[in-house]
Image 1 (cartoon, one colour):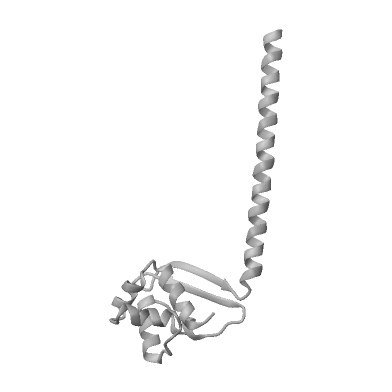
Image 2 (cartoon, rainbow, N blue to C red):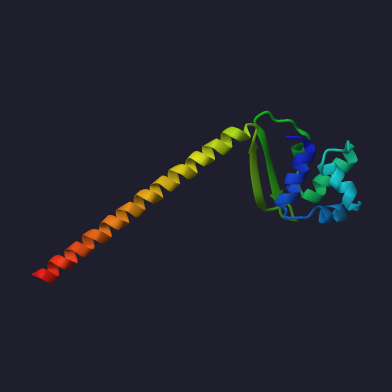
Length: 133
């Protein structure tokens, strides 16, 4: 994941608009948007400023990790971790795994629904038997 993508992700995790982020960085919204599009080569001072605003370590923005990255967002006092996202290098396989989990969940729900229908039918049969006695 590129630095500009990490910046955008961290901003979104904070639930800030690009305009809010630009204001925090004391720059124009269009200038900040260029950062998130990867159109600007950031110097170390600007990266430090962005990391400070996002309350993350600058190394999280610049390090290249083949296996993925983890971004931790802390409260304003740097005490409590309020958000944690782990991004893997192979998004397609992660999405496929999640889809399989969802599919399995859907199959289990369908099975439970069938069991409920059978239980209701058995209950009705028992009621009729009791009536007929």
